[in-house]
Length: 566
Image 1 (tube, rainbow, N blue to C red):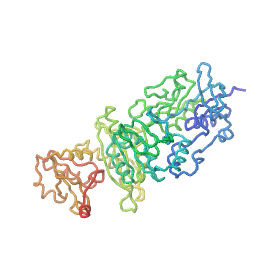
Image 2 (image 1 turned 90 degrees about the horizontal axis):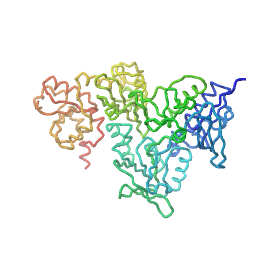
Image 3 (image 1 turned 45 degrees about the horizontal axis):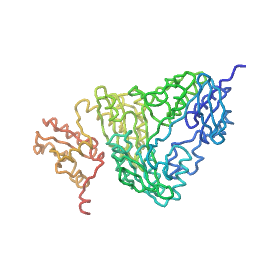
Image 4 (image 1 turned 120 degrees about the vertical axis):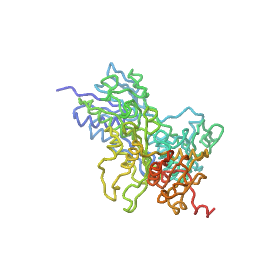
């Protein structure tokens, strides 16, 4: 009788259980052991903010397949509450210890999987160990937050870090009756995910929901009361009142075991792996948040801690530790989030990342509706597309709005993975029926705007660029080509403004000086683009329009109605 394949898996959240389940399906005789320091396996940590907010009622709902499923259903040995303390690659042996009893033992392996994940980043700030300061990475964290929240007298909460978890937590804290302040060291929410144009929409919406956002804020420590509970967040010498604090500062990969075992650590600080997810030791595999991967767009190594990626890693590893040759090609960096009434996401590179990577970029900013405007209930979305100027190759995209944003992100993720360009996207045969889409999807429009820019037909500036010009009181003409009634309802209030409806442009063009810089806007940029083309043909040399126009403008506007109520 052939010897059984002896597989040991360290880590039981996402990648580890997936690898174990895949290995069992491919090898019913393998001896499979899972080591997990927590009490549960395969817990849905991405659902933790919604458990805190009461949307998910019971913590058991966050465990899709528990310990007994793996022990009895899949015939595996499972050690919970157990920590792996050392790996001996030469001896093919793992040392483990029971966290409660301190009982130690060793396990031999033929194939080893390291799926140790990542740990929330907690700087060594003064007062960081006070009661009421939390991170959110596992079920006990979420239970602790809910319990603490239930007895909280000071309802002011502070979230440090405006990343994905921080913003999801902000929504759920508000739902639980807390007053929320979000502190972010960088300049806007989701700063590593979104560009300023898209993030500004998110900021505006969160403020409308009562969330206080403070950017450029570097936390220096915490103060507590006599009971050892946090009551102040220190930003330099400024103290911010807080009954509870959530630290949402990203994660650091858990690579100590691998490093001490002599395995290669990559440039990202994660465990280096090849396309088969093998480490520098061919009998040891690594996946999930502790393993680095390739960015398909740039070809460079990256760290993208996502449960979705961890599960894909697990399947690849489960195949390979049972004799297969599956590969993992990499990621394009897709992330989505729900924040109150908005859906927001990005895939690929944002504009700042693309420029940093050395690309000469061209972008579009297109407001639209999720489906045909004549079909009831259409909600708004805003699309930003990033492409390489010379080739038109797609580099990334962002979508935000109350409408169906994630569908567009998924289309873009697929296009990016396949190496598509704006021509491919503009002609993509997407599904169309009035309840689901317009005859031309917002992505088609976004691609076509870039094609117009490539061809030299269209020239635009972003809303942020226009805002900076207005703040500096630069000399130019801000040409509004809408109708007077629209102007009365909403407008950008500025001394540079001139109202000249598009149908009257030919007859009144002499009112504009050909030597002036002219920046045009309307509601969505369609009329503004037409006005730019008309002025181009008439010999005006310094004309552009505002990308997205008023529908993409995240700043204050004026109206006659507002003025009459002041």
